[in-house]
Length: 207
Image 1 (tube, one colour):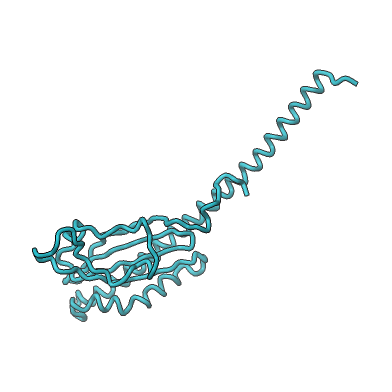
Image 2 (image 1 turned 90 degrees about the horizontal axis):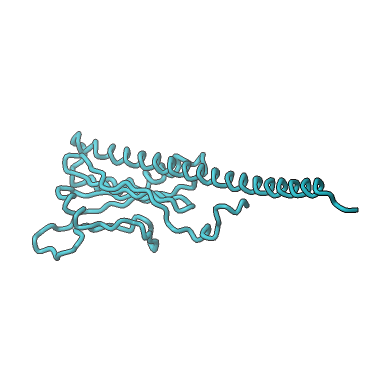
């Protein structure tokens, strides 16, 4: 029995519809995966911003005691350092209900000598510790430049705090403290670090 031209046309149309159906399913799945990742990133961003604002409010609360004369300005960096663990624990707990898995670290730093005998190119800042944790590095972590050191003249000290999610989303902050109990935000930056666990995932696999 010979296949007529009409039957051949119907077969071609059926094959095209089948291919289009498969492509539609794969594209829909990929779009769903993309939307889920965007939602996860947005959730992590809001979680980090919320926790960072909380940490900043706690630091401002300690500075309020300086402004009111309850704490000497020379003691403010030490007071923040002593409260760092409590502040970070509370910041991490803010988003516990969202299961973001946020981790926080807070360190204090002090401006070093700014005398004319300072070697050229020296940063002028001494960090008490790596804000990203011992043995951990982040290539995107901004270096403390001499220009930043110049802008921090007059600071009695400062605070750096870092927030990180399991997916590698980071929020790094640097705050300069002044003798009158005020502060200036020198850095408030979000960036993503390399995550080996997800490096082989492809965006449009549809899996």
